[in-house]
Image 1 (cartoon, rainbow, N blue to C red):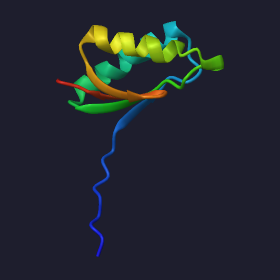
Image 2 (cartoon, one colour; image 1 turned 45 degrees about the horizontal axis):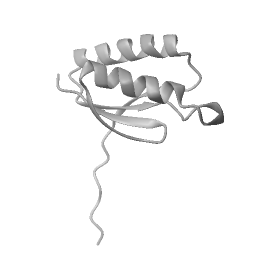
Image 3 (cartoon, rainbow, N blue to C red; image 1 turned 180 degrees about the horizontal axis):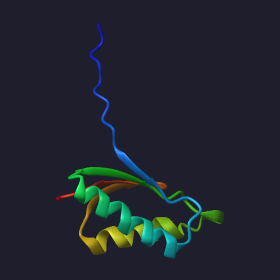
Length: 84
């Protein structure tokens, strides 16, 4: 008998198609909501950008670092750990 994996629901923010300005606004709002709800982990999807120019990916990585968040990432998404 196989052991069942526990599926954890992670709040997700998808920034695909947004400008850098709009993405910053969405990030601020999203993280404020997460803090209010005492959520400890989230996923942010940025995509990789047109013609391999990762504008939102780079911006989001810099934003998370500046705010002091710990995160893991791959091409186009972040898993962020909040220390509420």
